[in-house]
Length: 70
Image (cartoon, rainbow, N blue to C red; front, side, top):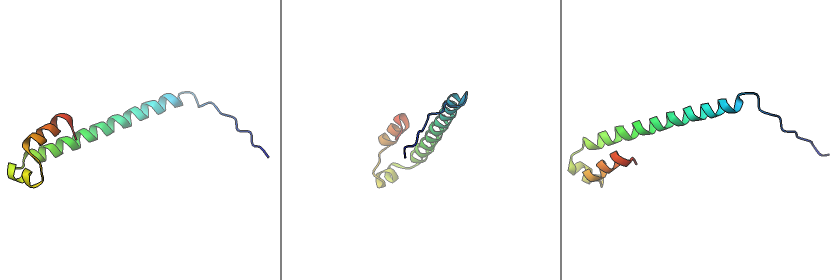
């Protein structure tokens, strides 16, 4: 027995609402990622060159992370 599925139209404004919610969630994610990167770079900049060397980084690496992110 075959089933006939018909596509129902989305309620008025549903697609626009979805796009707005997706944009807000995306913006919040970008802010969260920016803040995580900012905090990490700040913590790395507080380390001495010897401490950075222990974890395989240089001050130039930290400066690079700060400019372009991880």
